[in-house]
Image 1: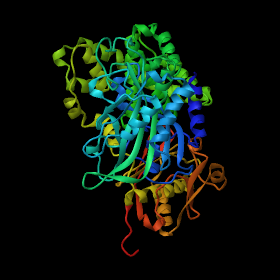
Image 2 (image 1 turned 180 degrees about the vertical axis):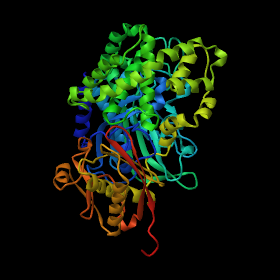
Image 3 (image 1 turned 90 degrees about the vertical axis):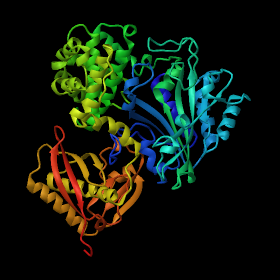
Image 4 (image 1 turned 120 degrees about the vertical axis):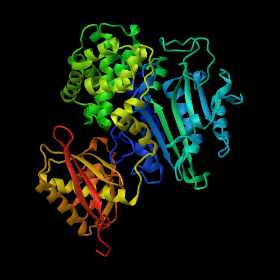
Length: 618
């Protein structure tokens, strides 16, 4: 089965079950300061899982591209990636466990043809707050036609047993993690994971540790591959530390597209599927090294280049901050691996065929005009490769020539500041010499610079979506006023390309070819504040995308929107497609002040805005 066929089969299957298809969200979430990237299919769906009505109803299906940098160290084991697609279906207060588990089982065995004998599942074992998920156990036993009792995961694997029990670290989901880590008001619930068994003779490459070692479903031996997870979101943490039932029970399913495809091929190495192997082929041609000779390095390069292509296509550029730093880290790690594979010095042109391979894999799905996209993406990647490549050989030589006693955190910082080596790259090179670098000294020298990317990729996501506090709602409404004011002062070429809102400030990115003058900044600020003073009503409407465009609503990401969208109108001043939330009247916003204006790349500017509350009685 081809990858595109699998994706469409998934859509068609759930559409027959009454689901409506929604387009994928952008990789860089808008109006969400809590995370750098969309790292799961549920992230864009969280407002609806928390109770907001979805324009398309209570049954939703899609496939969401994701970036998950937490897995960067695992890339190279044949199954982990930083970029992946997540197949998702959701029940928003509609069906629950019985339908979800039966439908997923039917899809895998009936539509794709996976052998039920090679499928195994895990369910929640229970704890002192939530009981064992007996309902899910009984559903699975009926589906598998087995009366074998469930087995504790720690007891090991028995091929005759289909259901395995694990605690909250493995079979509980919330944005904050296990139940004891959930703050008051946080939703969550037990989940059930599906695994595919590649067999006891598995041995992907030298990193596989299977052999005769005793294993279980959740071990890292490589034999079992998790391919899907059904979350039963039915609980909410209360103030006493216990759980209350949510008003409506939701299903949040996420399935690894690449992993399901690999399972359908009976291929334990996802990099040998059509979603990666064209990139591997380009790497082999560029280096003269075969995949079997060094699969680990080639998997890292293929994965990182794929992630880079998607990020650059969506407007991210290499930098030393946030998303740009992650992109730079991925590219430079790929460059180091490429140099280690290739005997002679690599060239920035070595990566152009890799970029084209990525574009062709997703042609007609996420990329349309390949030549046009390549013209946009390849120069950004080539420039970063060239910039790093100038210092790469010298940096590698310094690492090789430095005695182990001198390879420490300060040494890592010197490589970063002088040659542009991310700490992780230096650490990997040090591991070859048997040195496990500690990062404390590096972080002290660097003044937390690295933490901006790594803490953001982990800790920032820990809090989930941006909250709906009063100040954030005010600033969210102000983005619409600011957007329209920019277009009035600078021209209709201005379009929003990103925003980030915290309780302290609003950050707004937009297209414009030159620096704003102080006069223009003041005029924009005045227009926003004058509009606020007019006390305009903020009106919410649900309509088709075609109707939204016809009525003049701004919709710059229309290829990502559903057929039905939410439009917010602010008097006769502004009208945009947006998911909310907003104040009901502009007077609720309070006056604003633009505090900073700067460049964030060619043809892109950034404004920072804060709230200056209106005096009492005004």
